[in-house]
Image 1 (cartoon, rainbow, N blue to C red):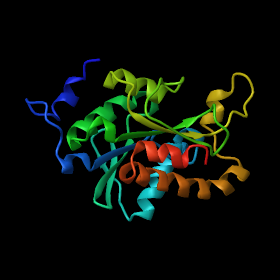
Image 2 (image 1 turned 120 degrees about the horizontal axis):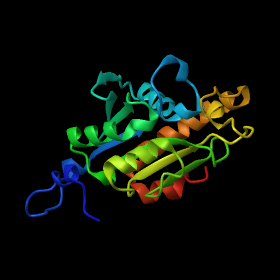
Image 3 (image 1 turned 60 degrees about the vertical axis):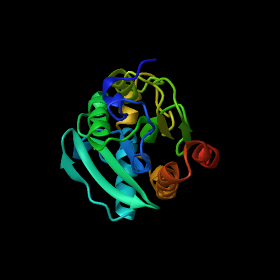
Image 4 (image 1 turned 135 degrees about the vertical axis):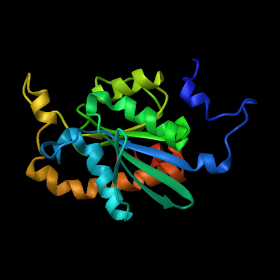
Length: 210
C-alpha cells in the first residue's frame, strides 16, 4: 500500500530512517464530542482519559486548530494529547493535521475510543484493524487511507435495548460504573505512557484484558 503524501514528508529523499528525536514524539488522540452536554458520557471516554492524564502530568490543554492539545514529557519522550474539536464522526481531519504539524510518525500514533462490544472497563490495544462500526475510526481510516495504526479500545458495555444504541453511548455513566472509573482511568494513563516507553507489543501484553 502506498503511503499518503503527508506521511512521506517525514522521510528524506534517500528513504533514510527518522532521527532518534523524531521517534520520541507521540500523538495520543482521545475521540469524543465537544460541548458540556457530552462530558462524562460513554462516547467521550477518549476525552475523559486524556483529561485525567493531563491532570496527573500537570499539562494544560490549549485550544488550537481542529482541537485542543496538551503536552508533557516522560522518560525522554514527548507526548502530545489531542482532543479533536471536529466532533466524533469527522475526527480524521484533526488527526491528519496534528500528525503533520508535529511531524510524528504513524507508528507513534495511538487512538483512544469507546467500544460497545467490550464489557465496561475492559481494555483492548491493537496494532491495526477495521473501524469495527465506530464512526470516529471510520473517518480516520478514510482520511489517513490506512488502517495500520495503534488503537486503544475502552469497553463501555452494551446494556441497551434495540434501537437505543445512540442514547446509550451518549448517556452518562451509571453510578456503579462511575465508582469504578477512577481505577480504570489510572490504568489507562499507565497504558499510554507504556505505549511511548515500552512499545506497542509490550503494552498489549501487559494491559490487554486488564
